[in-house]
Image 1 (cartoon, one colour):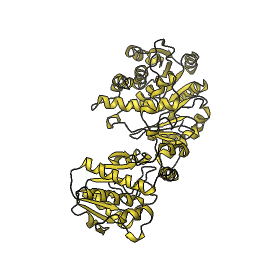
Image 2 (tube, helix red, strand yellow):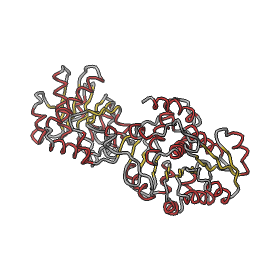
Image 3 (spheres, rainbow, N blue to C red):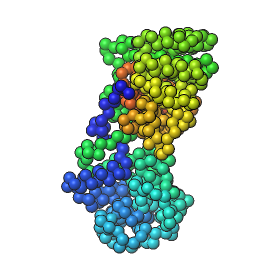
Image 4 (cartoon, rainbow, N blue to C red):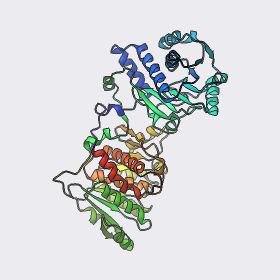
Length: 497
């Protein structure tokens, strides 16, 4: 990639995501800088008690404590709730005598009884605080913990999870054995990837991030490279229209149209225009040129018959971004068009058929990426090109490194990754985005932001967030063609920020 995004963790630290091991490093760094270790636990447990009190009316609470620091947080929460008059029962996995460190100290301050860690401890509970295991769990739940979590799932008691629901891997969002859904999850300092990646995201409920006294300065040594998507990541570099702008200064997007499915690239063209591209040109196969020409009023429609004709359109360097894929058709001709576009070294967005056309020889595509490039596959298209195991975040990072492009793996938890390992997880996509053609619109949004000069990583992140925000703005009943028309209201709100 020739362009590097200026996103830096020091500028957008509130959106930083920390893996469990990075969170452990943050704890150690805070203590090394004079922050009391038990003070962190006291602040964490107190934050849980406050969050429970804000969300629910007073009722009997069962606190399920594990043998580690997560359990210590639970003991602190139990003590604060009991002091506020809540009826509290504590059940401990293991024995108090085997607790160590801050967890042992927290347990020593609990003056109430400790119930056996069994399914019976859930009897009479109006709320459960799940403090069994935290985000660093790396093995499947088993034994008593598994039985109790399964019972908690079955009984559907309102639950507040400390850090993550027990059984959830905080680094990946993967469930290890079992995990009971929580209405509320209280985590500390920064969110974890598992709070945003499914299935974890669907189990955490509302996520509250509590400040427990860890200074932001510890992030400098941790050097995190993952963020939750949000305007703070890219709004400072958003290409708002300027007084002296003109259409070619705002870039021109060239879109390859298909012969069979014409609606896809037409939505891409409309999206690119709405997202601010100064000019949009659609290359239409001669046989169906009239369909495009009659229906598109926001784009110039150029007819072509051959690869040579398309290359002639590429020769105009004012067309600084090329978008290929939506409705293009799968086959050798699409491969040729993609390779011709990549050969220019100009910014290119590849989606849908442009990706599937290389399913038999993905290395031919990867070797040809020499300039700024964004790939926007859905899960099926991703699997046709890349053969990586692991969790979603790991797979997308590996894919970006392999192909040398920004990779946007679309879904309810879209992940955007760069070849250098930076990654962004999107969290604002509403369910109504699961409709045909929404990906074609995203291609247009990405292309338009690239055309206006945004770096590829930022352009992809901004486009994905705007895509979700436009869908939310429109609401239920959404079809893909509604997305570009909902965008202006989103942009007006952003401009006021």
